[in-house]
Image (cartoon, rainbow, N blue to C red; front, side, top):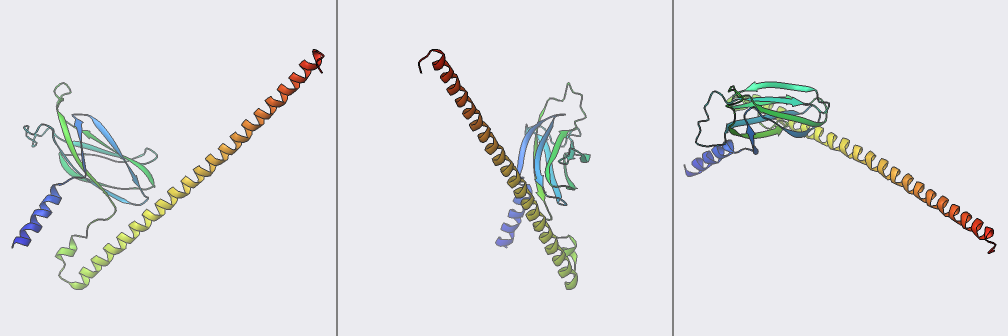
Length: 214
């Protein structure tokens, strides 16, 4: 009984914890940047509440607008939610994705001066088993769900590896280009120094000949 109670408390704690939180003014927009591989499912959970704990959080004025843009700044999704909810989107290309959150307070701007706290948890890939697994009574069906979940996890890991290889290749190309530019810049500097040195020696020789010192 004690073990079950401890497990229940741990689950409740995990449900109530969030990855990050930050302050947000009413009708203010803030963005975070997530680097996401191609064809990856991204799931976000959020909770919006007043920064002042004395104020009731069940106010009908509280709400959030979530806008997601891809690396080309094309809008993937834009949707209005209540004070608590979940959003999902799939990345169609690898790179930096912009997740913007704006409080969609319904109060007039002159009255919308409260500070808010936004709890946010962003997860990439398939993290949970299909709910049907819990309800499935057939062992074969359960194994099918489990196998599909493993396949999804393997595909997600494969996409992550491909994405890391693409980043390494891009970094290698940038490094080679930078090294090449540095080499040519060094050659140019050396050529300029040699040319200036030859010119100074010629001017000095002409000066000495003019003064009949040689």
